[in-house]
Length: 282
Image (cartoon, rainbow, N blue to C red; front, side, top):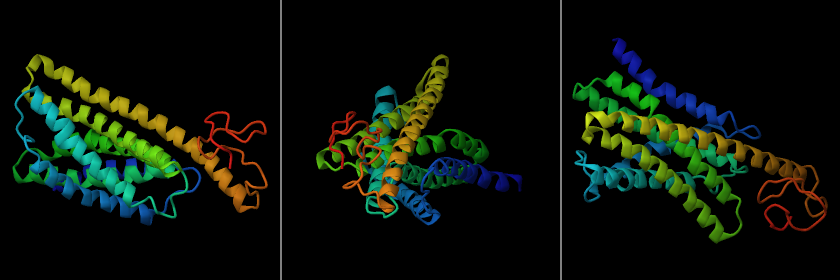
């Protein structure tokens, strides 16, 4: 009885905590929970096409033999597939949203989809462990401390770039920013999976280094995520102030905005171009 109470807590709690953690840091205009739950559900749905693609990729096997196979499966068979599917779901279901009015919103969207993906993935892993009698509590704890944060933090990375791209007016620049976000998410996820996949095939005296590598990647992810969160929050502040200026009659054609709409830096002087990024002040 204790097992069937603890397992749902281990599956739900880390997802709920991380989702609230990043949602509450949207200091200006928080996204409605109806939209958050919709994206969370889409993240769950994204598990299905990702799993199908992973199964049909040639050479992508469950049982790996050596470092080359682990590298292929980590970066191509899993990371590229999962992050691409999550990126597509996040981008195409939010870029027309009327709520998408700050760069930080992209982070909230990316985290919501990523945690939805992790949630259903956890259910499947734990259910499989129960079916095959493979210590479901241990697996639930392991994934609560590793896989769930990894998906959430990758959601921060891709969401940050989706937010940047959303306010970029140059189409080619917008495409490049989106590509950057996907690339970084794939690389970090791939490194994490690579260390995970190599553990079973490594000699016992090297396994410790692989485990250190896993948690090192997670520490780097947290550092990157916190830095991107702060940057997006600062830029969202300038976007919100500019938006309020327009709303209350301070239209940029009559009054100079306080912050650059492109890079978010404070505007100084009376020139027509931002001194930081060089874009026109509109």
